[in-house]
Length: 110
Image (cartoon, rainbow, N blue to C red):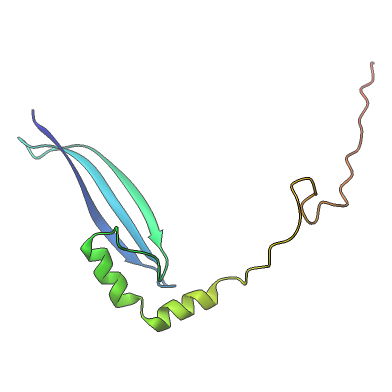
């Protein structure tokens, strides 16, 4: 039995916000019978204007067609506004927790 490992991009979906969801299929095939012995999947998402240089030609072509200037601008406008970095240090409590005061508990014997 001769086995061959193949990897292919078998699904590319365009999400409503312009993001691309890509699924790669990794399979082990018996080259004598054509039977698939094992398979696994890996998914990842690319947002409009992400770097696609490491992707297959199909993903690059779809990104070029879908990611117009209008699509990229709409996606970026939909992102939440970023807040400026605070000057908090690691020793300071996170916001909203500054009023938290732990209560002490005392074990009693019965």
